[in-house]
Image (tube, chains in turn green, cyan):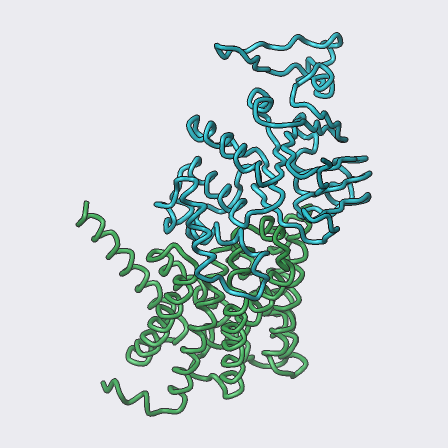
Length: 273
Length: 262
């Protein structure tokens, strides 16, 4: 089998570009949600967006638009609820999570015929990524990079100790709402890459691996991007060589990298001990 | 010589979700004050400190800050040490980065940290004898070391007003003695408001006492008087001063039978 061959196809080049943008987006956003223990919230936002996809499919508009609206609204609702501690945040997330899925299923059922877009929404298909989607991912990656460069000290302070940050007149609400919106958009644009079911893994596995190697947020973000890129590209090549679904293969590759890094650390510890 | 006032509080009430925890509070804090804030659990000591720190917005009343030059200002230079740290110990952040966040308001939110900020951080770490921990992740420190880091964060910006909420929690005995000596030194340059349950420690360092139990009673001397104890409505442990430190348990109030539920 020829390793160079796939790189000649336009769809494969697109998939590679998508891997790069996805690694950057998931590196920043993933390191943040892992550090702040927001993985469950992100899961809620991901699944709520399925409702938007079902609605978009039924009424015949772009699935990205439907998913983005549902993801953003649920993200802002969760952020708002978390400020009022009388509401149990995890229960609210659980309800949003299932409400989104239920709406998605109902509208899929109401739509006549097979729903191929919806299937790719659930499982992803990085090889079918469109030009528009690539552009959107590039723009989002740039926005995220600029936001983190501009506000990094404030982001770090708010993420670590929100109450203390507010004593320094830091715009805590602005930081929190901006970041939860970026999380929602990052999720929606990565749905094409790995699908609703697996998108969370793209955001959590590389940062968790990075966290094995560093205990500071900035290097953790940079390492997450590097590890994410390695996993995405290797996964893509594996899926081509072994003729397996791309999204799932990429996730398994990320897990393999995590396992190898974990093993190396254990070996080094026993070696030095 | 009249001293400058730094904080003017009048008829202040504050609490959570519109329900006041503290109310009708009047207090004027002057430059150089070292006020010990005592009171029963649930009496609102922490709510009071958090309101001054700007974490809780007052429900009603007036809270005005003045610069040492006597000008009313919106954003005073405050140093804040929160009560028992409920932060996430696995959060990826180093000691140096934690202390740097203490310089954020001085920087403005857009500017990055510079070399002189790091110098300020290292000076303060040196002073608290934890400079060797600068690059350590915060989660790998002992309780006493963490408390030093959070004190460093509170004083690194050289604030006018230092707000301390139970600073001796987690402190080992050695650090506790050091801590109070350090606070006396700091008090030469900063005005200090300190919440403490450690009534025995309090009189030897502080200059005055504020008793918070729903509302606030101010006592311009550091002695703990029977009147203060009446506010507590509960017998408390006291330390008497003498050559040999010894503890005297205060007597119950006349209506001690009402306290049986304690």
